[in-house]
Length: 344
Image (cartoon, rainbow, N blue to C red):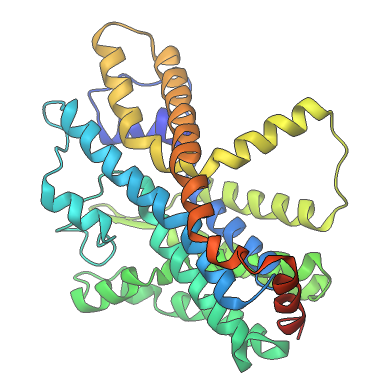
């Protein structure tokens, strides 16, 4: 949220005044994918694989669809001259998550939403791997290393000019240049439960960090441009997640624990709702002479409030409704599922 409100907002809309404080590092979405992969490993053993997969879909998809529709109508209700004004065909394309496949034809209504199809694909692949021969023992390590090495080997093709459009469509569509973030999350979980030695973990995590640095290069008229600051920030974030996962639970004051738990509970809704609508908040406040610090605070508060509303009105009730068939069997059925799909 800080990156979007203080840095990307001004980059995308140069008419916005420079912020008094700037956080220029692209960190949040990348670490979101790392954390998603980590918790996929934590939860995949709980019950049947279909219940696990359906639970992830039930948690992600309804909120995403609602966020797209809400953002669409807000952008149309408060148009700003020269800014993106979504049309009905844009709504359809965003609901179908077509951006990665053809970004030149399907613009984002809210740019934060790019992670959703990758998370859905990641959870699906996790379930398929866990059920297969390749998801266990030493074979999973081959999968993890190849998931990082193959995209790295194709990096020269990805940055070539001109790039083959069919190749770009496939590679971007499956999010190949982001696979290392899922690998990092899995590696952190394996190390935290001591299924991966520290030297092996360090080597694999270092490769994921290198892949993040390579991913952050962009081609400009002046040549390749690095974003090393963001790469370092993501690397630090990976290390923090790993240390927290491996360490015992920390004691903290109850009010702080409740505040962190509350915000964690609405974090997905906040992630979905804060960017596109937040930029409108910045512009409207600037037009009436509000200072940039207050603008930034207003965007953060608006995103948090909208995220809370989306969580309470859509995410929680939709998840409860969609998971209801799995709860009807009662505790005994869930116990049988847990015994059937135990550790391998």
